[in-house]
Image (cartoon, rainbow, N blue to C red; front, side, top):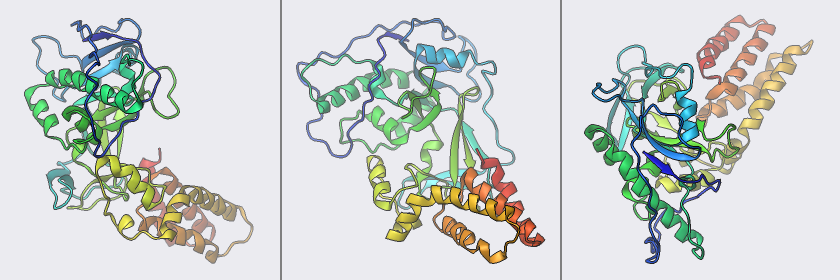
Length: 392
């Protein structure tokens, strides 16, 4: 499908919650566009054409890809970037060992994903192609807005027009994928979103490495968002144990363990920034209809709020301080006490994740080596080795 339309650089931020008068004006003339079926492997579309593509390409009379297909609403030149990759297409990566997860209903969170065996930090839990991928910025559809409408009306029109596009995209899915997509949670039933757009807004994962233009936008306004099947069942926590990445050559999400996960534990992903107070986290979660009840939120205090707001800088400072201790001619073991106390707080808040934390483990190991404490040094080296795979 091609739609001849100019790209817009504006960013559309949509309302959420209960919104009154969500209809479009009676005098608004819905946009019309020309649908043109073309060779799906075609990459020489006119610049700024919006294309609906099935990816990977499914040749006529050929069986579907065993890893599935995605419906992708994309700017022509961005489609070209992917299809021109030297290593595209690749199969979806597979985890090692027996299946590590199961999807089942939770008491308070709807559906959830749970570990069926112990999973080590850095392990690939599962991969999947998204059902649907669209621009994060809904203003990129290039809707021509009549003059005289206020911002709220612009948003209602944008959502109305996008629902039409999404209906076309979802109807191109096979029956099983359509059923899965339409069954996903929708927390945007009262803000003017159509049923399909509401599902996208509720379940979309940002794909930051997939973006329009040559350079990445500072606010990722030109990036894309994808709706996955299993990934959409992963619930939020401010103490996450799962990270996601996106492989452009295989056009698929990878979900990996951010820390060790035990059998029966629910998988969690953070829907909000973690370096902010509980009030700010809850405000960021409001569009999802989520009131987080994780341990960090339930036990939040002014002290833990301050810790979260400062922990990233403090982590950098701690690493630098330990490096200075390693270089110092004389150092005693108790010099590490503040660093170890800080690490304990990171663990209590569920923030013992990521590359910076791995770096902290490494320098603590090196300092224990300097102090002539090999057993303690060994413990931190072993933990560092486990975290090193997440240091990116």
